[in-house]
Amino acid sequence: MNDYKEVRLDLEPFPGEDATDLLAGMLGDIGYESFVPDNKGVTAYVALGAYDADALAEVVDEFPYPCKINVTATTIEGRDWNEEWERHYFQPIVVGDKCVVHSSFHTDVPKAEYDIVIDPKMAFGTGHHATTSLILEQLLQMDLDGRSLIDMGTGTGILAILAAMRGAYPVTAIEIDEFAQVNAVENVAENGHPEIKVILGDASALEPIAPAEVFVANINRNVITGDIDRYVARLSVGGTMLLSGFYEDDIPVVQKAAEAVGLEYQSYTECNRWVCVKLGKPCAE
Image 1 (tube, one colour):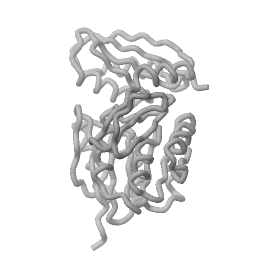
Image 2 (tube, one colour):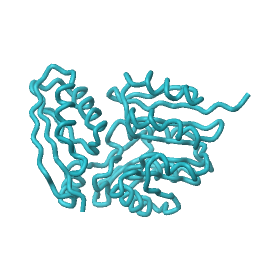
Image 3 (tube, rainbow, N blue to C red):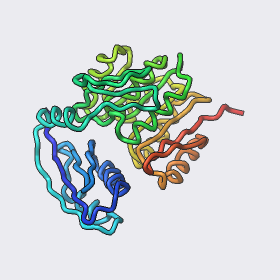
């Protein structure tokens, strides 16, 4: 069982939804995995072993909005929180009018072409966060039939699952957190795609994998820019890379790192200041 820190951050006066999105992004950079925003602030969750009070205090001190942040931290048992979070915060969602994401206990589920069952158990990625839905929307628009795909930082496995449903093969998913990796294995089996290979590891796990025609990573800016040389090494010539987990203001930093390893910036999509950047690996002249 994985225990977690539940950290409640109340913003006074409340600046708005953009402020909670930014706060979630800053917390994500120091290891927080799940976020429940509301009209007063955000409740965030981090594995107990990754909780760092000094790093949290630094986020609060550096938060740019003119408001006071009241912080309360509580230790909770992973199993109890899993059930509570799934049943009270995770509701069915439709992405791109073609894909519905829901948990196994939901009964009133909208109909869609692609039906994905996700039981998250503290792993990031239910489609509710803008970064996940932005990549889902891109995958819905791409021709994936028979194309190989790597999903770096797979979380629940949701992106790999949709890719497999749309005909991508082979599909390889990599996750650094052991608990999340086990959850991803469960989810790919639940959705009838046990052929998806789910690997436990960081970017070094990419080394023995054959280059793929599509490479997706929904992590955060610092991890992406630090590992992008390994990413591009596992992207086929002429392939497409989708990157998310960062803000519109971060695009120049990501673009600079991408172009330094030979990737070409193509476009981006945006939702609530979060973005998904599309890059290509050009064919040799």
